[in-house]
Image 1 (cartoon, rainbow over the protein chains, first blue to last red):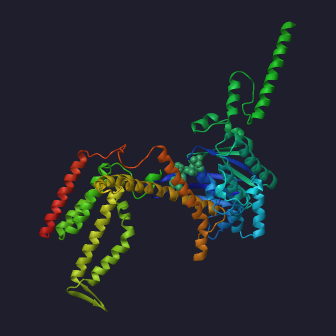
Image 2 (tube, protein in one colour; image 1 turned 180 degrees about the horizontal axis):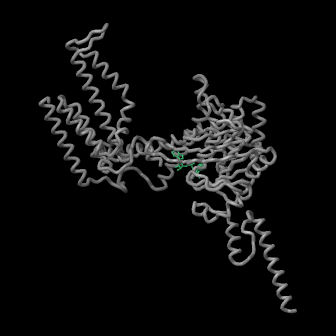
Image 3 (cartoon, chains in turn red, orange; image 1 turned 90 degrees about the horizontal axis):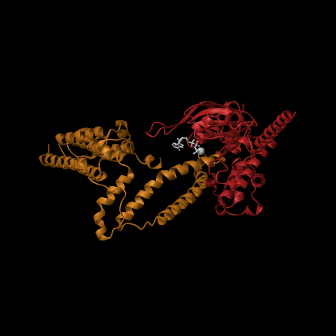
Length: 296
Length: 266
Ligand SMILES: Nc1ncnc2c1ncn2[C@@H]1O[C@H](COP(=O)(O)OP(=O)(O)OP(=O)(O)O)[C@@H](O)[C@H]1O
Ligand SMILES: [Mg+2]
């Protein structure tokens, strides 16, 4: 196992009046090359959970293992862990600080101790991957638009070349085009280079398309941990948690309720269209067959 | 949450929590004055009784009151030590250039008791009053200064905004720090210069966001036609109720008793 979470609990403000139990006995195993989606209502503990994975938060109780080693053991090198597990924060544009875009992206590789040339090479590649054009390399990061800042911040983590990439709502506030571009790029990295991806998102549609495993967090506990297809069959329960299944799931359920024999487990619009067309043509051929029978 | 995480405020619902902040503020001042008025054991006993009944009435767990003493322990120790060693009088003990006198012991004990009472007494106020309510009270209490053109309202507004921003900025610092640590930043090791340099990735985004927030706030206030003090009314104006008048009476009685005790020297 690449990452293993054992019986993890975390309480904010322990010992004060404002104690909040953000994670409650979480167990999780994450394998190499997985594309994991994490969903959950606001305040369910998603961000808290993923910050444990690269040792930014110390568990109140429980253990985190990376490649079999406890990351909070005496003498464990958590700084080098962070080059293996890259974390893109929610609203990462707040972390930009350098005088120009390229130097800012080079911050991560530089901290790894790479030479200047290597850093620059890494930074340029990362910027290309997130679709920042070369004429922006020397611009101050504070002069960029919100979406551009977001991309630069994502590049800042990509440039560290992590084996595990964790993204906390990376697409919030991006236009639909930019959103698909970013997610496709992440999927490409995973398919091509075999990195493991953990993506926190509120978009069920994105989860349906990209994730091959979906984890639903509810009040600090893991409610579901399965393929998106199986998780979305629980759409009633998801609604009780303030979540929902993709729109298309509802359409399919409606159609089925009205007597069309469609596959309610369809995940994407394409799948759904195929299933509907098939059901329709089946119905049509049945009708013609019936009509034929009557005539005979 | 923001607002509540600031300062020491302990949220619960007690008589003291509901009391008008003006009463609490002036009452605390009276209590502090009384502490320095009384001289004899009876006086101290009265102050102790007042303090204990306030702690009980506030429903704040005792350990929170004790916690507020922690930051002043050092000052207290130093004050007591000086009083112990430097008070002239009948020498009990001599050690090198130091001598301990009977008066010194008495003085040190008095000082210690006064400081403990003072700090825990004022912490009862901050534990039961939100910073915003306190600013509100000050604005009203010092309102008379408007006559000599002191911008009381503006100062109070600045104070509440500053207070409101402290938790926001702490939270922001924490977030940015984590984000930079995730990018391999190292805030913990190295010499002085290296550590100072390591602060840049933290301070630049922090200042940028602080200025942006300040700008946004100014814009939002302007959009709602905020124009300072004159003619401005409050959504929840402070108003005295029955409990507050009773509290005033108690404070007055307490002060009278302490003055009498001070005069008689009991
Ligand atoms: N720094 C903090 N101090 C105190 N409590 C916190 C802090 N950060 C989060 N919490 C609390 O912990 C719980 C989980 O928060 P978390 O940020 O993990 O939620 P989330 O699932 O990421 O939500 P969102 O979808 O809004 O990002 C919430 O109840 C929140 O109020
Ligand atoms: Mg979050």
